[in-house]
View 1 (cartoon, one colour):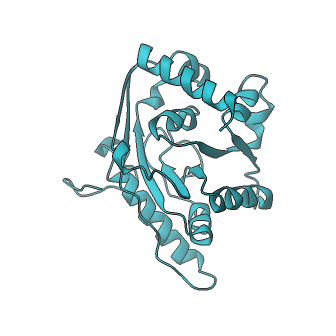
View 2: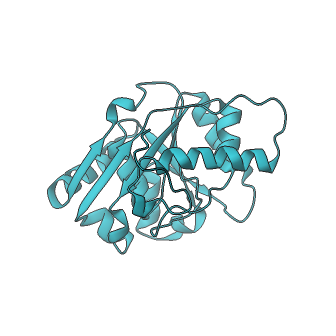
Length: 217
């Protein structure tokens, strides 16, 4: 864990504890070691940085390459341990980064929706399934609420306010599948991941993955 990463996490934790009503539940569900994929809904550009203080592990994540061109956000992303992702197609380099990280018992945060969706969950993409099956890493579902009210990343990064909630579910693994899987099967597995996240969210955030009332993860 780099000194810059520790500094960023410490400052972020101080800010959110000072200016916002911040609460995390389910931290006992976080495995203390071994490879781990953190799967979360995505409301704000600041969600990755909040995951670093909500989940007590050194988290790495993928961020679209264009964000690294911002003179302020770019350096912050590198300090947080982000890796640039080309979303225009299959990014072999980013995939290798993810696999190498998990092979060395690292923690990778992924947003299955592939983009921000502040109005509720949207259909998942299948990239997380391919990484989870290839690595064998368990998946930790996380639900976030409140960060959609920031308006822009600068406010969320430096002046977070309001009620921010992170709820961490129990880790689980995808079933082992031999050989190449079809897109239909991959989509079904991606949907099952989203169902786990949805069960942690209030109804207003569940979007295209509504869950029966009273469901628990």
